[in-house]
Amino acid sequence: VSNEFLKCGLSDLYAFSGKHDHHALQRWRSFSVEAIFKMNHDVETAFNYQLTTSIANLELLIQKIMAETSGDFFLIDYTEHHQLIQIVKTARDLSFRIQHGIVSCRLFVTIIASGEVNNDVVGTYAFGLERLAEGPGVRTVLLEAKVTTGRRLRSFVGY
Amino acid sequence: LDLEAVANDEEDQSDRVSDLYTCGVDDFSETEIRDGVECLNYLIDNLIVGILVSNNYFRTQEELKAVPGGELHEYLKDCRLSEGDAKELIVEFFLRDLIFSSLYSHFFEGEVFSAVGSGALQNSLELMMAKLVSGGE
Image (tube, rainbow over all chains, first blue to last red; front, side, top):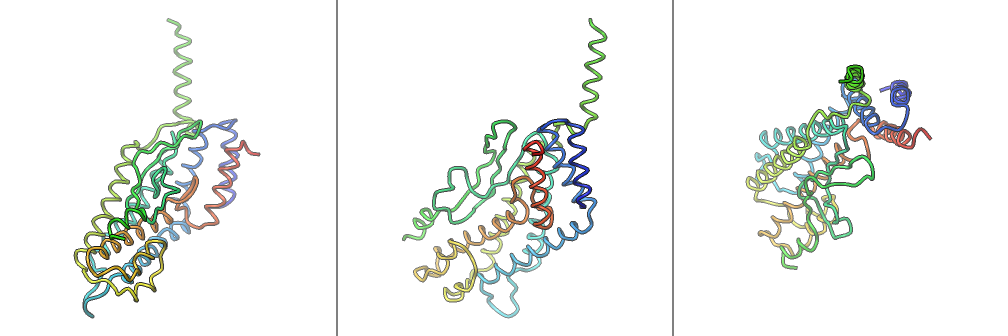
């Protein structure tokens, strides 16, 4: 995506909206994301690279944790590899939908539950979803992210 | 009935619909997006359960010291953990966090834009949006 395209978008935006308009800003983001996904071959290539790299990295790290039982045994076989590809594609699709298809507000996929920021969070257990509405910028939790805390973990393992 | 007013109102509405820049209609509902997030969580659950069920052998504590990671990694390499349920639990949490944080940084991290390709492009877009929000200042 060239800078010229983005600059055109900016000047168009001012011409159309004439002022700071929430929907216009969201539309500009939507158009930009659509253009990036559909028109720029380099970025599409980057996405494919991103997809391959993230799967390879995940596989590598999983293999570092789980021990192989024999030389012929593969930790990440066809089923797991296929599942990983599906997961990454679903994540990418969701990311695009949120940025391109939602203009009335802003949605965020979260990995830390609201109010957990200062607690002893050691990891994420499930994604959450939050909405940032136009105006005062209040965040509303639509789906609570699940986290693992050190306290919870210590209680499980009997420390 | 003020026909002229009705005609003007219809014209205004028509303008609003055709003017994509000010159209605030979403392509997807929040429910659809929330379902999408839940679907992603479910797919990751399936993967983790599949890996844990089919692979009951973990690396030794010594070998795990070489695995990169955050706070969960400290638990993972703790010598007090046996090969039993506790270790499996820690491995499960570790794998989950690994996948969630990896997907988050690749596809969802960012103030306004995410997963747009390079970090430089994302920074440019974020800067432009910040400029727009501040009214071009």
